[in-house]
Length: 274
Image (cartoon, rainbow, N blue to C red; front, side, top):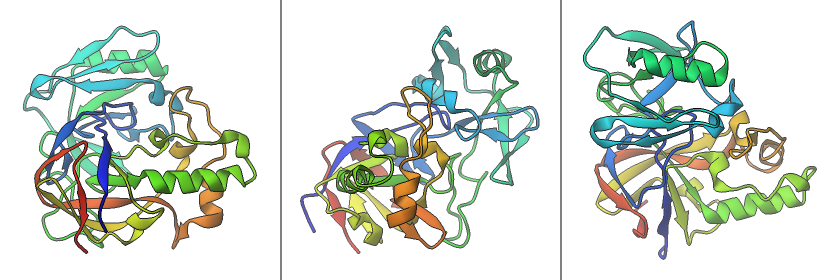
């Protein structure tokens, strides 16, 4: 298989917020540099995502030097957030499991609470090398992940999106399509593949980085949220349930774990090794 190329790269500094589309990104053992190192938590310490707060889709975070971020949202003045210094670790809960984080400055909590209308604090994953192991059912010893849902990277293909949009056009809610790729919040988007080819990618190389393809990505209600309006529909979950059920997952995209770090760039060839 050849003629596969990186069409887009995406980094989301804050979990569930809009991110950036850089021309290149460093691959770290736990994901793309700067991807999902921050998250919002509620008053009980549970991570908040678009599942609970669709309006997070309208907020954006962009990376600044030194790991700082700038956050923006409709009706809000942009806020620059510094990386919190060493401090008391605070456990937060993500999908029922505790992860130790460091709480960001009070101004960030005030900003997000004002935007969402509910108490919210911003936390930072200070040391992704040790804080959160990858699911042991799919990981090798020592593999860790950022605050992404489960795995360091998510890869998708344009051909699979086209195929899914064809299914939506023939389905119960054709008016909801075609869907853009941002519904699926991938890190790497590939052109030149056949539809659903990524299901079989067990090992791939991009630039000087190598990745294991560990499993399909099961999709949730966030994919039904229009990332421009925060309004929810029924697709793509209805069409995925009818045509793309893999085990218990409604599958779109493939989860990756880095085997060798390096740099990936838009335009890089994607080489399927296994």
